[in-house]
Length: 301
Figure 1 (cartoon, one colour):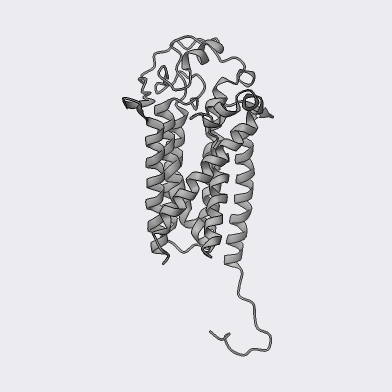
Figure 2 (cartoon, one colour):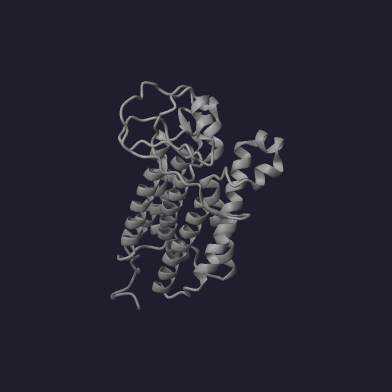
């Protein structure tokens, strides 16, 4: 996120010679409007819409499964609190020196959120809620997964509008963008990396929006067929982690090991875990019912 945009140690040099005409305009609006001391930020609006959309999808799924759809609003609230907390904690871990230098400013800034920290924090908070209500964790998590993908897709639109440092590496593709009005200093980023002032970059948030939108459609369609408990959640982990892994190749996040970013290593771990869980769930569905020794007829109902 924003903290990654200024980590010049991991970027190295970007290729120059980007004089080819780009067709994409600069569409960055971090502030929608201000009235006196009140400022409405585009990222905040899109984040709110993301939670609302996720809550609507969750409510429909809970109702379809015979559970109380009113629980969706409480789960979204718990997810929001846990997600913001987890995201902030991981950002502190990633930039410990920056946190020690300005702890209060670091905690209360509107930038620097880390998605995987938010995902873990949100799931932990919602898990506590599910356990407190004595609900099935897998059944509820399956209900959460499609809405979570939808929320991610909408939330990344907020990242694009705000220009919060999620942009990609320079590109000559016709849909390359500039972020001169970004909430994170675009001009200073360009100067720090020795890039031409008219440089255009991959609009990485758009790629993620398209990817997570596709994940939502896949998961939403899976509901129409019988699935073992947990299967939709496992597929969410596999597909969303794959999207993030691929998009990271054109984002400006620092490489931490073997040419991969922190998010890519986390994605690989989730892909491996989800693959195993999908295989186990599928294998369990295919396993034949045990034969009762000595029985001459079908097992009792």
